[in-house]
Length: 350
Image 1 (cartoon, helix red, strand yellow):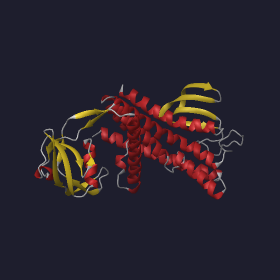
Image 2 (cartoon, helix red, strand yellow):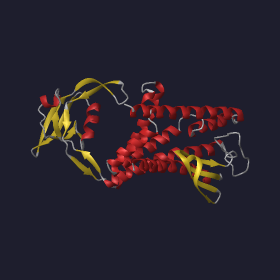
Image 3 (tube, one colour):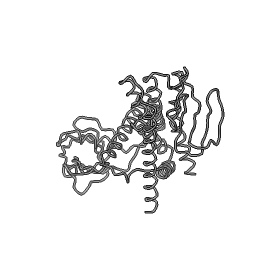
Image 4 (cartoon, helix red, strand yellow):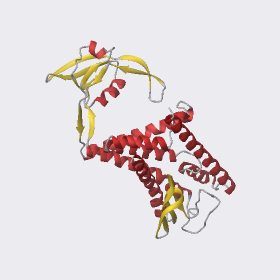
């Protein structure tokens, strides 16, 4: 069952990506010959208008094959008016950007759906204290609900950490205790820590642990849009930073996951309920958008680079250069897929 859910999620995300390319290509007057979910042998095909819509045997991606554009052989070109080749570089760039944009937009819609369903959120109530706790030493008590720090409103637990990092070391807390407002001054402690990428950082702490209490937050129309926008920006920033850390060597290649990891995490998310599945799907959708923007030949980002080169030099790259770059791009992609699969198998074997 988990495999079916994973394949359905990935197929939907890929379909949305390719739909972005398809719609923009048609808007630019480019004929689309094939719209395929998956690669390899076509299992199901149906012709609608000029386009053959297919589901193929290898569910590891998808493609839109436009007239005059073929990644398997970039020397195949057509100079008809409805060909990708005859469009201006800026028109081609719009077509190429439409796929990643569709992924970002889909993530926004998924986060919007989560906001409308209601988000279980940890309240700003103090549950316990850590061994070293400046907050406890300053008079904060278990059960106190933090409502502001230095005059900045605190609604939920997630607001506390961010506000502490941005505030001065000595902070004015306002809490509710036994239905009364209490003012407490707390001096945070600076510690050495590691961020999510394993880099050494300095972080301020006050030594508090949240109460297990959660409440369902229902967002209004405007708040839902703000929530979805903030989460999409957060996810995009996180994925971009992850790729940057991988390229610079901060994150090792042993952290790359393959299809097995995706299936496993999707299964875990689906078992945790609809909200978890929507949140994970949104993150993977953003991941697809970001990765396709990388300047690797055979990806959207690589083709964008070719078109930018043509815009600047007023001359398209030669057929042999395109062919060699595309082969190199596929070699990189296959190498990354192999690394991901190797890491997956290594994790499975302990």
